[in-house]
Length: 113
Image (cartoon, rainbow, N blue to C red):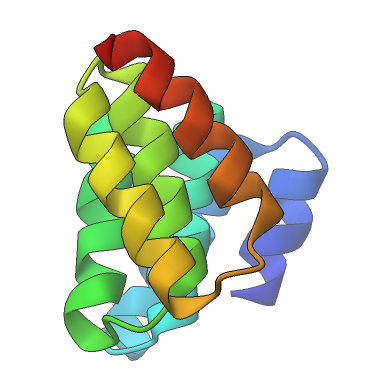
């Protein structure tokens, strides 16, 4: 996982995803790997896959606010604004001071008006 994070931070996104996939093959129940895979997929515009990765992390631990947050980001990019708001609200229910979730939720609400 750490290799994948370093690769993603270096802009080597495809390599990062490959590293995350290898980590998942070793331990498919590692929530942080699924979450970080979702972050990288979102970064490169593979939003549906990012949602899927976040869903895997959330299925293992529904109290992971950052997985809900990244899921909301990806859903927003897919134009699924109401679902994005729901994800951001879940992140905020877990971590009320999650400033990014609040800010991004407020932007998504504007799309719904």
